[in-house]
Amino acid sequence: MKNILLIATGGTIASRSTSNGLTPQLGPGEILEYVPSVQRLCHVDCIQLFNLDSTNILPKHWEAMVKAIEERYDRYDGFVILHGTDTMAYTSAALSYMIQSSPKPVVLTGAQRPIDKEITDAKMNLRDSILYACDDDSHDVVIVFQGHVIAGTRARKIRSKSFNAFSSINFPDVAVISGERIIRYIEWKAGNGPRFYTRLNPRVFTLKLVPGMDAGVIHYLMPYYDALIIESFGVGGIPCYEGDVYMKALEEWTGSKKLLVMTTQVPNEGSDMVIYNVGSRVKRRFDLLEAYDMTPEATVTKLMWLLGTYSDDNEIKKGFYTRINHDLMTV
Image (tube, rainbow, N blue to C red; front, side, top):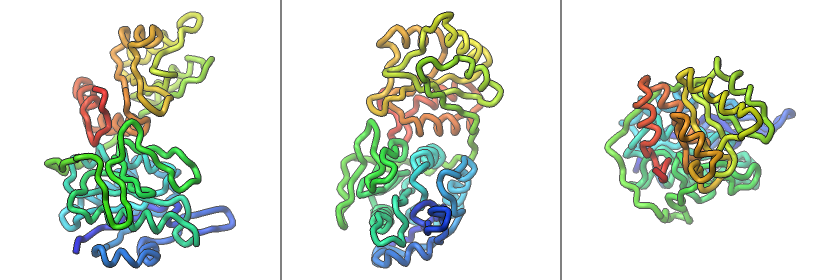
């Protein structure tokens, strides 16, 4: 039988009702008791790293997850992380960059309703995740949720309450799970890793443009952040308001040797700044990075990883356009 490590971090799956709302309280052993069928699939060991609502997850918690897996990597055939759904897409993206080319699967899952409820998605998600982690063809970082297997860099939470909470953005599902069957859609060969990284630079800010927003906010951000991601409209561009105040603010930002990244607020199909003048003039003028079809979660966490790993600007820019765990298909 395969040996699987179940890593508990909290989330709805581990929550109980309290007078102040749902709060993570259950440990991994207690959670496993609700799904006794997994004993037929594999041997499961458990560790509890923390017991947090995922709203409270920080980059230091991603580092703790990676260190826990690295220290135990040789002893297990796969890893399942129980995690809250609200920031799971950020965590799965971050772990995709911090655990690269893993021949063994690192699976994240959780639930929209606690596992102790009569009507819950938690039991199915946990059982499917362990089933997937046990399969010989599984590897790298994925989310398993509601029967869908999604590459760690492509997941996004698109529903706040429904069981089918996650979707794969700009990339097909890796596989689906139907009963005991794993139906694979993507031929995905294991890499020659694993390669572990445990240093992040969290000084990355995402600015979502709003019509009429004061460009002075960019100046305000300068002391606090090393990289600025601008979520623009449509395929990407910067407003040409009177006085061209945004261009002046971006000149100040890039003149301070800080990274500038352009992406789009539109969920699907990605950016393409050269289509319109509002985008092409910016791309010609500044030495910026364009996220194209990357998800916002992948863009943020990839920059945190790059800034924490490399000091040379050329290495950072090269790394940004290097495809990792299916994160970028346009380039």
